[in-house]
Length: 179
Image (tube, rainbow, N blue to C red; front, side, top):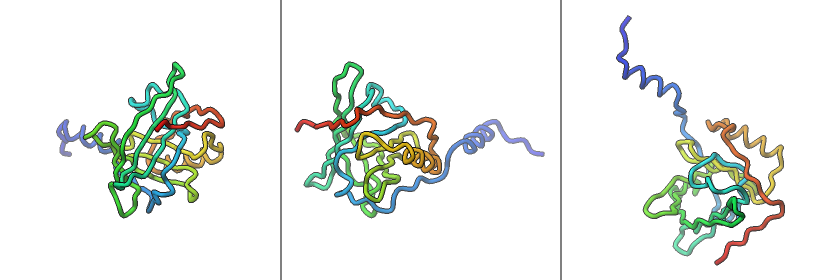
């Protein structure tokens, strides 16, 4: 029996533990229906939201140049609201489900719409490396049965739903973004 060199064993081990399945997005997104206010229900922890303790929203607005204005808002531990403003551009015009978002030009990140309700009441957002994930809703509170159903969908996509952290939202909260 022939022995494999150590480097080959390491590479084989990495391949065995890596999710190689391609990540599918939705077949088509009507961006006119998608824009508006979204409430974050849950997310994978990430460095750029580490100071957000709750009341997280995303406001998307179509611009005349075809891009989308992005305003993310969250409450910090001192009670103050924090905002990040960015721009999204369509990366796949055939489906509108793959966007590139920047909050600090010229650096863009993938924003893929993986799933959404037929009435655009919820959306699952991720990216191809499965490092980032968000569950968004048009309302601050999501029905627990629906949330459990989305956890199953997320797992089927190759994400680990145990990594999700639920986002506290003030019931009835409406965040108005200053112009």
